[in-house]
Length: 540
Image (cartoon, rainbow, N blue to C red; front, side, top):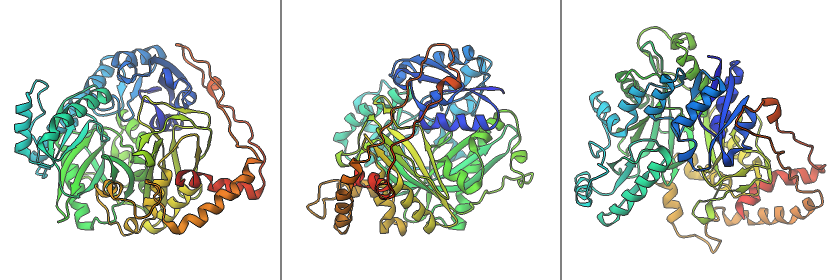
């Protein structure tokens, strides 16, 4: 393996490029029209245009991606996550074209990547599943047939996409009269996001927690589970904050979870990185939810507590390396449980406006200063001068905080979110900081419905709806706002990214390097105010 095409965009494409560089592998980016000046395009050695903004005509086109790989002289493809990452036809198409697919085989994807197929496999492995339909809904099923299937599952329920993940193609249905609309919306979203409109039904548990176990499997029959991740803080079934290990999982429960995850992975001969997801109810019982046959968005927190690079592990597994070689302390025989070193938290930063129901906030980023410091990592596909497009998921970056214990990890994350300064778009930074600082988060008293219930609750004060800070902070906010006047005298530090010439042939990395000029000089006083600017932006 010498040259890898990354069949994706945004922060995951940047993430894969960095590991490939570390391994001495050349990289190839692909881009749609609106991603012409994106960071992953600038960082890759080569870059190829694959179509218009519409994902179905660019990032979801198997033929265009494989053609780009051939033209670039790539010998391997990394799918990232989302788009075609869990598409068996893409995996098999790559292999047929003589390319190494960095992920599981198409056969394994069909078996476990299908939500309905995965449920059957879990049952055979002796793992309890959430009640739901045993097969996908037929595209030709009548309204009466769908209603009958829903009645058999019971309300409230979820209509869910058979393929993909990330909350896309998923709708909750509280009553029979809402079923038809939910099915139409879920099918349309699943088709546009994954190229697969198949759906199934699943019973909604009352206020569960969402846990998941990272797996690595090699081509030699070894499957290794890692410490669980807590992913319960969600809105609209999209994760906002994740942490590892879970603050509520006992050692005994951890052993059960990881053993169940490994059993499911072994049952299908899983290779590469994958994730088994579970729901945990109030009684402590857990149920298999689904398996993602790809790298997860939240994999960096597992990296933080294990010291592993999971993208590197994926690549080495695709090259035939044994896990026992990668993990020096792994003994032959039964897979060992991989414990955590310290505690890690991840916050997803979206270009969304919490004050307007989390509507996307696309547009030009006029200023960006990412957080840094001990234990802080920022995985991002954004930069100052880049425009967040409307065509794709509005994820801007992921902030990861590691510390020896949970209390210090929380403190580091609060500091990182306070330091994070983004202007030109609205983001979820302030909203997530409020969640992280809440007594409920400190006490780990939350579930998958907590955020939605908080948003549905009426305001406790006459403050503007969506204003999530307490009244005791108003004086501090006013002081910051008054002092911002001085900042105007020292400029705004807006820097536009220089345009890069692109064509159908490869773009040399040296041509794509972004040049950054020095920002305006500021005094120590205004610099400290600058550090507070992002906080005020997200509070106002």
